[in-house]
Image 1 (cartoon, rainbow, N blue to C red):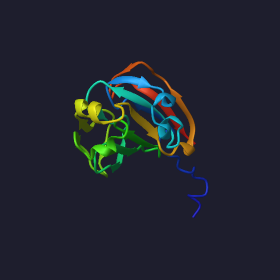
Image 2 (tube, rainbow, N blue to C red; image 1 turned 90 degrees about the vertical axis):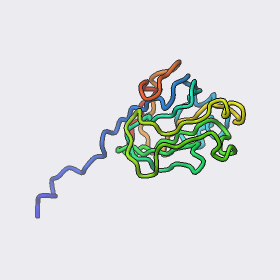
Image 3 (cartoon, one colour; image 1 turned 90 degrees about the horizontal axis):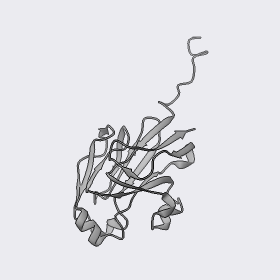
Length: 167
């Protein structure tokens, strides 16, 4: 009867989450992403990557929450509740999936570095508005802090670009 009276409320897994780059390439400040939906943080806090190749890996450990039918974007939820969207290029939804190959499905559990999507870099360069790929925390309202840790050249699944702490 009394065993729950003094038990600490269970906290979510680590409140602090390290977010690695999902691609090889170059860090892009969120305000420099050439799309106001992202640069003005309408979807949330984050950063961009200008990819140097067509491989996208998971930037965190988590569960795949959404794979867009066109494979141009993937949503992942970390154990601590942070929700991350990786959007490959800008205006790539108009490509209707051409050049994108998904490697995960909704409900899959992934580790940082696991393959998510492969894409034809030449085709995206030719047909998309930009190859810059936003990495957005879609539930930014739940954040206590967000810090960029690394800029410049980044390695997919290896370089820790940002840290986010959920409140």
